[in-house]
Image 1 (cartoon, one colour):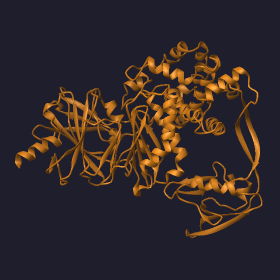
Image 2: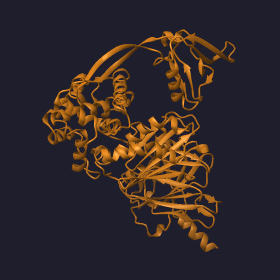
Image 3: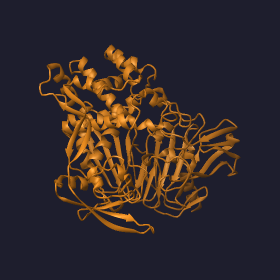
Image 4: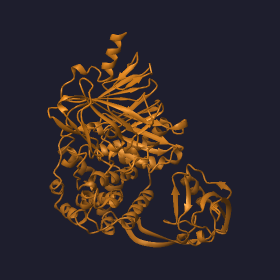
Length: 635
């Protein structure tokens, strides 16, 4: 029995680590022991020659463009020699530990707190880039939150073992070395003793730290589905308390968009496996959304019926899946050799996020998932946001290069103006090629020129694209991407025979709410009045007050889930002259709340619309060629 225990201990600390090369990291993460929402990590380090070295957790990871400081969530960091003696460790920052006598180090241990459910000081972490430790239920493993690296040692292989309950399954874009290795007896991993006799081990190997961080995992009871897309295995994994959202439902929601993307990409994909990792939650979240990776994307969403999320899921999935083009196959040196603690940002967010967002909308109109009218409304929203919420005259290359320090409040414009840059570039290219060559073709050519193993120089990309396409395209970049001139939408849309009108006033019935007049409380999932003076004339007729919480309409409770679908149905039934009632929870002077019904007669109000797009009825032959290339699928 003693001999067997020693064998199991060796497995827990590295799974046959005796045969490992000196330059390889070997991590072990035990999910079967959770203490105060923390798990322990054990590292058998690669061979260290220096007498002193620094261990880092990332400050930032690719794709987020915001500081995370993952080291804040690390506790009880220890470096040990072969005899188990502690080496001197000095914590030099939130994300770094200086280790003395590092050439004698044989093991590192530390505990990790999750970012989803913690009050650690510092910047909030975007949920899809965060970590979740929910004992026996769910573990979201963004590797940047669990695994670190030694100074100047990110290019070595990283092997990691996940010890987990036998009922759990690990969803990831990685292909495991092995899964479900049985643990037949107790497990000794430094200071932890595993009591779960049914624990199993999954083992993975990545070629570098970049590759490790690029592949998140989620462990929970399995709910998975598979879609075959152009020969690639696309895994869909869902964690949803109460199984409100099942993986088969997610599959049904996104299968059409994935098949359309396959055609949009020429019928082939640059990956053999891809994973949609979907975490649905009942708890309040800072933000919902998704984060792309080369072989997967991780979604953090509210736990509500899929019917209320189909449109949003299609948008998210379309955007994230297109990242298999860029930055996987088209990227600069700044991304290819990413510095996780002193990052240098690329100036080409118009490419990584803007073109990707353009593709996500364009594929849907080309393949009939949305109508041309719906596509124009989506473009209209982006134009409104780009010109009202953001600085429309800020050079986009500057926004990109300095998004971490000078312009963090402008980052959101990559999904608005960035996509519009993609649209205008597509129209310009098609006008120069009689509709035959657009941004799709440009991206294919760039991917063929570079690929995932070769990076471009940030300063050369515009000249490279101009040389591949047309000299006029260099002027486009100079004026509208490097320069401060706002995009002249009318000029570019005219190339496709699309009329553009800056604004017009329409009479219509609506709910009385206007942008800025209401807010949303994520903790209660309720809408409240934030600025009663900003309501339109219909909204003001109710006598709504700041702080009123909307709980009902016409005697029907406003649902906590699916509120958009509910209000859309209400709007469709509204008629001028009808009686309309809001039920609100209103706070009295003594602080108590009471329900109040407020009634008004439905009236039409003036609503100002901006950036109106419509097709010309009699386009020229040239305009029609550009329009068909832009809006119609290739024949």
